[in-house]
Length: 49
Length: 437
Image (tube, rainbow over all chains, first blue to last red; front, top):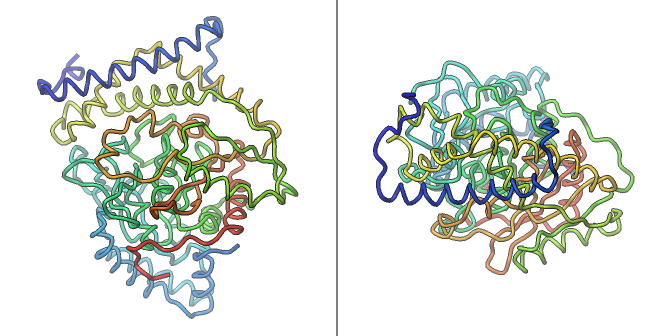
């Protein structure tokens, strides 16, 4: 889809930041995955606050 | 425990002060010291003076709209004010004059507030300074960061320009700069103020709230915008926590504030909570939602963003729908867990931040997840939370004490924060201070 295209090629610095950011987010989502694996939540998707 | 705003309101009622003179003084301070500190992105002289004149007439007719009538305040440049450009701390948002006011601005007008200007912020409230906008400076020491994202609001209030400032808080963006700037900050229960007309960062976690020089002023601001008075509490029950990363000097300052309340509170048992998990859920939700919010603007106005912000916004695309749903579910589970852990406590107290302000360079290398560890949980769970000053460390840098309450107990949290404040030595004024009150 057009809106998902990158508007310009990323610079080397930007690729470095992006890589670090993605690694950081991956660590966080892995942390969430570990917590949900313990609780076995597959049968209860209650997301209400 | 009345604060500076209540005192000013009484002077207006008695005729010993005038909203027009106040507006003139605060507009001049915003245009001089406020600009020097890079706290303001716009000073709204013409409209503020018209609002002040209308306020003066209401007081003459003995019909003020609220205790906020005629009081100079500022607003973070992330919400729309009619006939002004919303800058959002960026060059990416279209620079067109807005045709309408955000809901919170309408509320301020209904209360008679005089809006003197719009305040600087981290770009789109997402944690980084756009280099061409520049950081707001800390009135305690201009070489120190004042955090963010409501950085200009904290700098303005700390410098005594305006009596309050509207900020936003998604993971700590009111409480963090309030603590680093030595002022008070209030993040309400989620949804207390409508976010209509606010440029969102993460709609599930965005909160609109206040910064002011004292908790007593926060109480006045809260009630002037329709907040209810607190229910009487005979002896508040508190739980005092430390997350284990707090600098010793900050811990000593916060300990002292808590200990001086010993005879007036019951101390509930401290408890363990998975702050890292909570923070991970908050950042996952914020990153995913911020990407969704900015996706189209990123493609249209890529070069208007700073490199750091646009790449961080782009990174949110790396979060899958499954990870996002998992974060939402963890939030719901943590909410239940928090209710269980705090069933014997009216208020939870902890440091607002583990440390004090450092240099801008130090702030740049700070990891978002470390910066938000102490504050994000209360945004994630939507709980009312106030940060009040806890004094100065040996280098003269402010620390903050955070007080969180149960859902909807905003009035009680604010009243308790004002009580704690009233038992403490008053904060000194920072070196850069307008000297108007």
